[in-house]
Amino acid sequence: MADTRYLDWPFFEPRHRALARELDAWAAQHLAGDHGADVDAACRALVRQLGAAGWLRHAVAGRALGGISDAIDTRAVCLLRETLARHSGLADFAFAMQGLGSGAISLAGTEAQKARWLPAVAAGEAIAAFALSEPDAGSDVAALSCAARAEGDAYVLDGEKTWISNGGIADFYVVFARSGEAPGARGISAFIVEAGTPGFHIAERIEVMAPHPLARLKFENCRVPASQRLGAAGEGFKLAMRTLDVFRTSVAAAALGFARRALDEALTRATTRPLFGGVLADLQLTQSKLAQMALTIESAALLTYRAAWQRDQGRNVTREAAMAKLAATEGAQQVIDAAVQLWGGLGVVSGVAVERLYREIRALRIYEGASEVQQLIIARELLREVRAVQAP
Ligand SMILES: Cc1cc2nc3c(=O)[nH]c(=O)nc-3n(C[C@H](O)[C@H](O)[C@H](O)COP(=O)(O)OP(=O)(O)OC[C@H]3O[C@@H](n4cnc5c(N)ncnc54)[C@H](O)[C@@H]3O)c2cc1C
Image 1 (cartoon, rainbow, N blue to C red):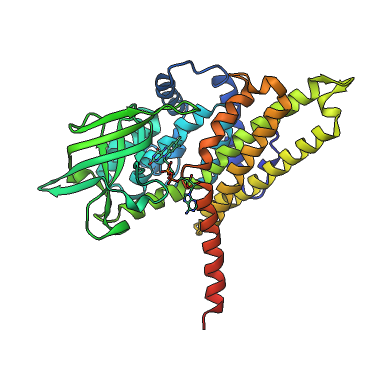
Image 2: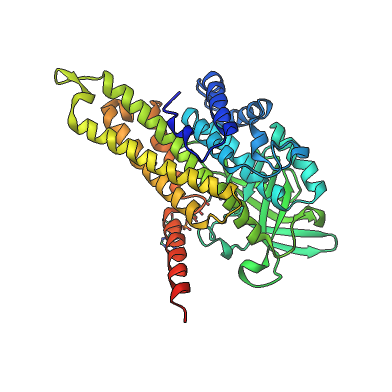
């Protein structure tokens, strides 16, 4: 196991420390090999495996519904993502999407909706997806245009969603569409759309630098029973933001996992690579790099677990989660780049761990709020506090 001193931090309770250690041992045994070229099959298998081992119980809320506890434990989710990401980016992806894809059901589902999906998600028997982004609505997501027209006891969906993780392999999609109760963000509702619903199909498979199932979805005259609307009509945007709020800190944790793995790989290489009569690690410029990598990781970890702890206390974490995501994802990119540099030519060879990490980290600086969006959130919170004090 990598450096685990952070588990002694006061943010954690004994159950968190035990969880991280158990998962690390499990992952070392079960996630060591290559996942193979068929990324869809690999993801399906990983979801089943993570479900059978009980790890997905942390991704849903409600003991009676297969969850480990009645509310999602952010620190546990973060430790799970960090540990999985350290071992396998695809396993982290499979875990994270079960949580993000079912999060709106945990938060706002009716008893029937929860009973239908959450136990299956927790067991790894149903694959979840979260369909918010559109070709013209990414960072400015309130501009989404996919329409949901009320018609009798159903809604009819027309439009597109893109960049949808698990697109093509999911059993259900939580889809956010414009139902028109009010302009802008107040006229959006959320729906559970099952795979195979007539009028819903995968329009395009999207290939990305770190392969995982990703697709553009198309809805054409797609009838969804009103009983599959999630939460109140017109409350979908708020529900999407609440769902992202639960999981934003966990993106930081995944970045930490990638960064820790990169540092481990860098240390191994630097201490064994013969160079100029010694090894790479003897050179002071190498030591400077290693020190900076460790510092970046530790500071991002402090921000991440502070945000997770604060959320578990029931406090608002808008500023803290934004800081954690920004610092951890940007920092991980730098750490991984330094690790590639230390590996020299070998660092850019396809399939080498640091090369894989270099591709895997990149999207984390873009999704669930790009770095610029996190900067704006932090500044907005700062200015709000100052203006509240200045107000006459
Ligand atoms: C691998 C991957 C998986 C994804 N999975 C999902 C998923 O499962 N479900 C889903 O709904 N979406 C998903 N997304 C979509 C993701 O959330 C969007 O890509 C993201 O919100 C950015 O939107 P965009 O790509 O349209 O970029 P744009 O909105 O066009 O933004 C482009 C760039 O502009 C900059 N920018 C943005 N806002 C500002 C600002 N205010 N000031 C200055 N600069 C700014 C940022 O650098 C940003 O990267 C995924 C994306 C990727 C890459």
